[in-house]
Image 1 (tube, one colour):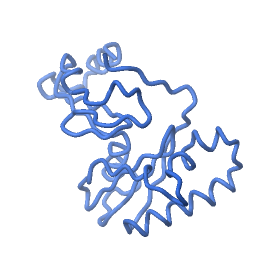
Image 2: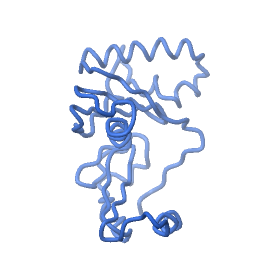
Image 3: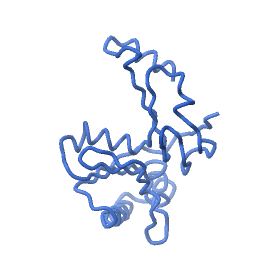
Image 4: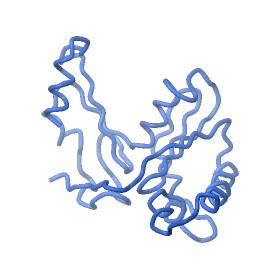
Length: 177
């Protein structure tokens, strides 16, 4: 990470260290920079003060849930830029992440990948990892995902869904210590 930060800091447009902000995201519930869950990362992260752990980084460091960060980015710069109302970002990767943003304000740690549909935790069926593991055809996966999104809409009606994510292949997590 130091090499990445050094490269960024050497850019002429990089702010001075006292103005620099570094955001770090986790596939977990994060409150006040403390990681509080570990459904898709090593359990040793639970109760880790990631802000303290990363305090040697230059500038301010803020930690938050990865889907929340993706949702905020879409609300401010992407598919929902300038849109009012409630949007829901769903990330499909190792698990299923979610973010709720209302009029540009994040409702943090929604964790809607952990809701049950047909008695099964959604992310065990609808994550990209689950689709690949089960070698599920895209059309079949899409029909199931549509049912999941309809279920979420019944729980929390939104004016827009944004779907994103990445393949879980090659992803690894490590312990904070």
